[in-house]
Amino acid sequence: MIVTRELTKRYGRVVAVNAVDLDVREGDRYGFLGPNGSGKTTLVRLLLGLVYATSGEIEVLGERIPARAAAVLPAIGSLVEGPAAYPHLSGRRNLALLDAAGPGGRGRTRKRRIEDALEQVGLAGVDRRPVRAYSLGMRQRLGLAAALLRRPRLLILDEPTNGLDPRGIREVRDLLTTLNEAGTTVFMSSHLLSEVEQLCTRVGIVDRGRLVLQDDLANLRAPTGHILVRSPDATRISMLLDGQVVERDGERLVIRHPDAAELNAMLVREGVRVSAIGEQRRSLEEVVLDVTGHGSDRMGRTP
Ligand code: ATP
Image: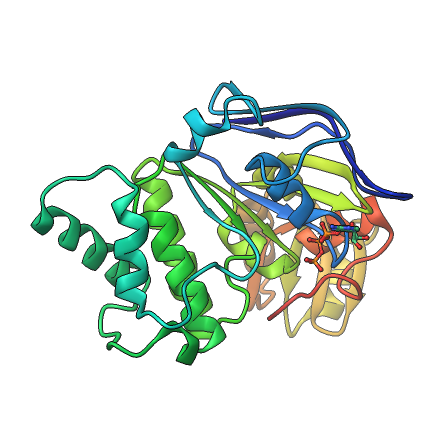
């Protein structure tokens, strides 16, 4: 759906995007994750043909960008930095103007399309007040509604939950998941680890313009081969499994063992009380820390 090769964008001496090979596949919910200033917005703008690359290639939906942008953009819904809207018009009016350049149809069809988009982003009840009176969160929702008007195959979104409160963030997450399950590929940038971890199926991690890691989240968070156990009898477990206990912190133990169910059965046989047990997986934060040397200090965990 999106492929870039050695994509580079310089602003004078700043290399905002540095030899990035992006690979976004059909059906992905792709999270492009990086701290502020790492080049996310620049990359999104490059993908949409809004700025030109210094070098490298871009293909979106199988077409070269920017050469074939006019042919490809109608199949893409996008949201980049501060969604554009006429501030003196209402949200509905803004969408109607955008829709006029879209797929057409009868008046009633168009009206339905606009109402559907507003409803999907939780703005169905919005009144006639002008967009200038909207909160940042409402503007962001309106921008998403605009991105949805074309019922796109691909969504390219720059920090789509920017300015939303926790409820709004959850609603956008649910909306993107629903759209994705219905066939829309989602590419979104974010500086929030938790957001990407909860929403995305595939992750690209960008650090100072470079793509330092790109993989399916399931691979990145593969089991470590250790089992996490919580037990009020942690001392007994330490004695029983001497040599297999990798780490102990109060009631919490990390045990080298291939199978949580078997370990649990064995502990129960020994009369050990177990309050929680499960496979240990690396968190996305640990993965990020490994590849960049910095984690939640530069990238936010929660909004
Ligand atoms: P944020 O999360 O803060 O939006 P970002 O990851 O989107 O950051 P970019 O906005 O792409 O990062 O910026 C990457 C680098 O490129 C920064 O050093 C920025 O100062 C620089 N940059 C971006 N746009 C321009 C421009 N038009 N002119 C000069 N430098 C720019």
